[in-house]
Length: 399
Image 1 (spheres, helix red, strand yellow):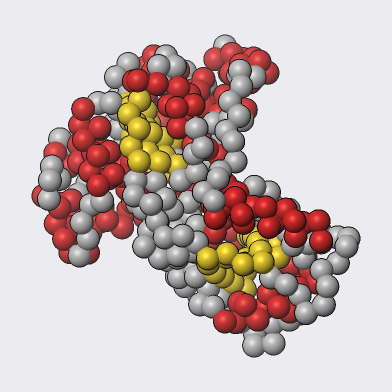
Image 2 (spheres, rainbow, N blue to C red):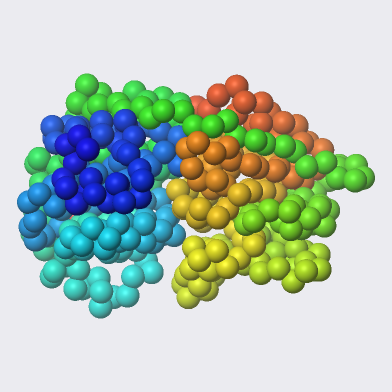
């Protein structure tokens, strides 16, 4: 296959796959040393495209030291990416070490990573900022070649994005040839993100790679047997109907907008679970052990449904999921697309989603979001000057 090292080419061949055009384009940008923004549909292999240059370089010229830094908006996504990277690396039989560093990482492993870093480190903006505060950070990052920012739309326009931009500026001092890569499926203003990603704000320094479009999603609004209530915002009235949808599908994710609603919906579904189907719950207030147990059960296909918050609405790839149910208003077309992208996480298969409005006013909001998705309209990206309080915090961390 074009420009792929033999182990990578053979791995694609054993799977019966061929690299997609945007994946090869990202490999070419990597070999040219250019910064790049990849915009591609959910299930198009964005993450693999972002890592292809790293894998190719480490296969062709093995070396020690930290090579690539991957930044995720979610700890669960970093863990999922590690699992998805380690599998092909093991199957190819190459010596490339991949580790995570988040708030869930044990302190002894964090200490070891500073002494003997992996080739690829998966982290979050906050953990990266803390890592940069150590006196030996310049030595650790001196070998860094690439930073990959996944789901960039999730934090580029927020204070988390400000923190990440400051961290990237520090990294660029330690590794002047550092290449910046960003990935997203829902970008309304590509040039705005290119300017955000570029070291000096010059969009011409960042190549834009656009993937082929995926199948249009199938979205419907669940209408109750009786009328939608005027008040409330939970959708709990529809628990029986939601349970019937879970029974009719292979695996479902039920998204809720708050942790409290997540627990309430989980309890309501258990009460309506006449068949005793295995159902889990996932949100940020649960212990690390509980979250990892649920994530492992989903990855192994042992759950029929998972009730979750935004802790899982980005990037996580569980192939058995064939239906996404949104409890309450989706809060925008971009967020809706991200969440329904968890179902049938493949480019050529339509995602299936069911919206359950909490009240009649939320029905209008759900209808507007559905119409926007059908029209291909995304929520606007509102870039603004960096926050001074984030700058002050970063300066204090450097002191």
